Amino acid sequence: MWHGRQYFESSHSSDCRDAEALLRRRKTEFDLGRVAVRSSETLTVDELIDSYIAQIENPGTQKRYKLSQRVLRPLCGNSRITDIDAFTFDRFKELRIKAGVSSAGVNRDMALYRAAFNFAVERRLLTHSPVDGVRLFNEDKQRKAPRVLSFAEEQRILMCCDLRLRTIVMTLLDTGMRVGIEALRLKWADVDFDDAIITVTQSKTAAGLRALPMTPIVKSALLEWRVATNGISEYVFFNPRHPSVHIRSVKTAWHNALKMAGLTRFPIYQCRHTFATRLAASGVSDTIVDQLLGHSRRDVLRFYTARVLEYHRDAMSRLYQLRTAKTELPGASGVDAIDELSRKGSNVVN
Image (cartoon, rainbow, N blue to C red):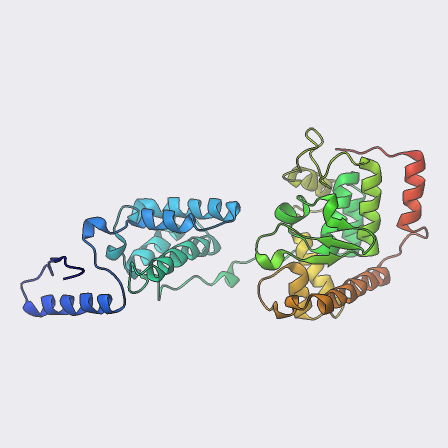
C-alpha cells in the first residue's frame, strides 16, 4: 500500500522466495523515498534523456547530447528505464566500435547516459544507475599527440594570412581562447586596451569566464585590426557581409594558409595547445595554466580575483619573454605601426 493505493506486481516466478525477494526490494525502494509506479507509468529511456537534456543550459551541449541520444534509440530508446542493465551498455559499446566509431566518440556518448541515469537516481526514479560499473575505453592509446607550432612555423603561417586571419591567429596563440565559443564571439566591449585585459564573457563552462591579460603582441594586433575596421561592428571578428553578427568559422581560410605555408593540415584549435605548451616552457605553474585556459579543474585560485590577475599578468609576461628570446622582433613597436597605418589606411582582406 502507498498513500492508500494498493499496487500489484508479478515476480514472474512460481517460487515464493522470488516473490518475497521482490517484495523486500520494493520495500527498500520505499524506504529510500522512491515511489513505486506501474510499469506503464515508468519513463522510457528516450523520455528520461529528453528530461535530462532539457536541464542543460548550453545549446551546444544540448546539440551534442541529442546526437548521442539518437544513436542509442534503436537499441533501447523505447525500453523502460527499469528494464535497462549494464549489459545493455556493454552491447551498445560493442556495436559502436564495430560501426567504426572511435573510443573517444563512444565515451562521449556514454557520458550522456551516465549523467541521465544519475539524474534518474537523484529524482528517485531508480535506486541505482545501470551505467555504474560500465567501463569506459582508454582513449590514450588512440589519442593523437597535440600539434604544437614552433615560432618559425607561426611566422610562416602569419605571412600567408590576410589581416583578419592574422589577427585571429595571433590572438589565439597568445591568449589560448577557445576558437568558436570564445574568440570569434569576442566584442570590442570585452577588450580593455587601457588595462590590457580581454574579458571572456561566453565560454564552455563557468570556469571559462575569465580575464586574460594581453601580451604586447595581442594588444598591437587588435589595435591594428580596430583601426582597419573602423568600428564597423560591435564584434571584433564580424561577418563581412553581415557586420551585426560574428563569423562562425575560419576553417577554410586556416587550411588555405597552412597549404600556402607548406604545412600539413591540422585544426586551428591546436593554437590553444601551443599556448599551453609555451606557458609550461616559460615555467608557469599548472594551476595558472589551467586558469588561463579556462579549465574547470584545479581552479581554486580563480576565486581570489585580485591576486590571480597579478599571477596571470606575470604568466603572460613570461610568455612574451619566451617569444622575444626565440624570435627577432621588428625594431618598430606595434603601436608605432598603428599610427602609420591610420595615416595611410589599410586594405582588409576578407
